[in-house]
Length: 299
Image (cartoon, rainbow, N blue to C red):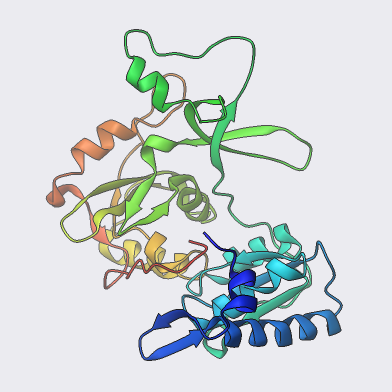
């Protein structure tokens, strides 16, 4: 496959992409990108700096990403649908020097200042070492748990903090896939637990005919189940709307006396998934209409 920069030099008239009624040649794409690279340089961006993109899918994204090929910049694609605290965390964590956004995406962009710590979704943890990792009697599962580079995973989701400590926060098997978008329960649980009236909670996926899965939550409220669970669920959903993206907000919330856990403290998520597969057991709506998961980058 030819490199886009090479195509722009050798075949500038060749169409780079067509999006709806808009078509852009490699030559036009390169020209726009060069102008943008000049603007970024004027703003003080140099090789190794990070630029955040809140542009969705379209010509603007391709134009903005092009300077990464020529200027040595790092780009962080972000969804236009992220809530302000989520954007706040990503911008702070990436150290973005410039944010490129369409007007529609500028409404929720926070200016640099005292960055608040946002929920951390984490990544699947792989490890290496002298001992081979395998599943007894299940070679296929062992192969699936080994990367092409030879690293192994036990299916844990985690992150490394500023002091170098590894925190295990979730299991890859419990990642919710809503219309093609990955949603990590730990991130939603962290947002729920920011409510002082919530003692404990668990978030997991349940089957949905349209989306494949939707986000379900059970909540242990301070003082026991609320007198008006429907109103409380709606209030929780409204509060979450300011903390996380719409597709991460639980479709429904069920209030329980206690979140079921193993002796080790882990939530019995598989049992919860099986129990709440029945729509009649899912509790009360936390938002009034389903969120379109979209296909925006950065989700």
